[in-house]
Amino acid sequence: MAGHLWLLLGIGLFSSVEVASKWVGRGIPPLWLAVARFSLTGLLLMGPAVFALRRREADLTWRDAGRFLVLALIGVTLSIGLYHLAIPRMRANSAAILFSANPAFVVLFSPWLLGERPGRRKIAGMLCGLAGVALFLSRPAAGLDTRAGIVLMTASLILFALYSVLAKREMPRFGPLPILSLAGLAGSALLVPLAWWREGPPGPALAHLSWPGFLYLTLCATAIAYVAYFSGLQRLGAARGSFYFFLKPVLASLIAWLWLGERLTPQLVIGAAFVLAGLALTMMPGPRAQR
Image (cartoon, rainbow, N blue to C red; front, side, top):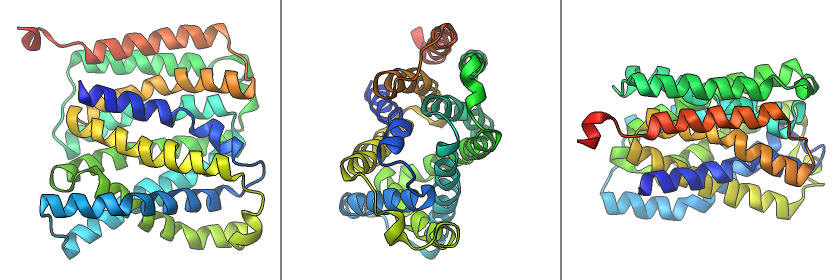
């Protein structure tokens, strides 16, 4: 039950990222926004991360440092960098819908990296969830999303799925806090040269930043959301826990409707029904568990 509650909290906060990113300020350079977002998140989590390492009596080796660097490169520098480049090129609810397809890739990576093999019901649930995502993207207004945005977001969601599986593999030893803190700091640092090259120095770039929106995006939609999501993955497993991401388009579309006035359509309602059916298939206990 704790794992389900953590995941619901994490996905609920993740669902507001696209809207919050637009609230932070129109025209804010996306790469510098990613750098600011994850460097501050890493600093916020540093104190709890050090405490968690001391409590677990886990000593970091050079090999561990190398694995953390790979996690930072995949999960923040590449995945989040591409994600923030895609956001200005897509509508908020379309970006959330497309990104929610990452559980399909978690299911592909999990047997290879974690030994978590999905059963028939999980595969059926995944297909049902993907059908819901396809229905979300099939609405006529989808033409407002650029091809570049869709390509960038697709690459981002695949990399985030790989990051989720690799991070889950390290959690039994370190827990989620050290992984998220170090990945945020190292990943944002690796993103600085690219941001400087593409968008110039950070001062003028962030001059029009909306601080209330940025603090919400960093503290709630990033720091708390990531801790909640990975705490849920730690308890339920990567393949099963990632299926909660199929709820993201449902929640994000409601938030975009309420906050940005983006229209709800019959496809959204039918897609939401497919998503909920897929989640139910995945989370219901099988006959053996019931016995």
